[in-house]
Length: 191
Image (cartoon, rainbow, N blue to C red):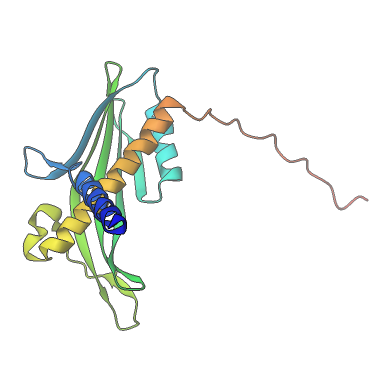
């Protein structure tokens, strides 16, 4: 009896955790899935250093640039997997746009424009993109509801991870490293 109650409790906790990840994404005014957070900033942050930090520490971020208003914009992607009994296989990639804006001792993080590119096994046995991209909001006819919910759960967890990474940097910025002194040249001709 105790084992059954414990298993029931664990199953309820896991279900609640996965639901919480999907709840992180909401629809914006253009009916696009969006991860949106506004948080306070205690000290000024360099958008250029934040962009470099994101490119270095998050492999999904492919390009990050500083925009005119003092914020930063980035593009990236994450792979989603189809889980099998023993192994998983690449099912597709979800590309996104990330923006961070600073204003009035606050920062706004917005991750949106999710585009799904399905992967298919090619003639060499490798999973490769098919070249067809679909906005994630319109992917319901192309993928099953179960897969879409799974992708939204993984996407919510990924966005929360990126948010935590940005928040850690803003609270504890890495000091700018000075260039190390040049190496001393040795003349190998005169010995």
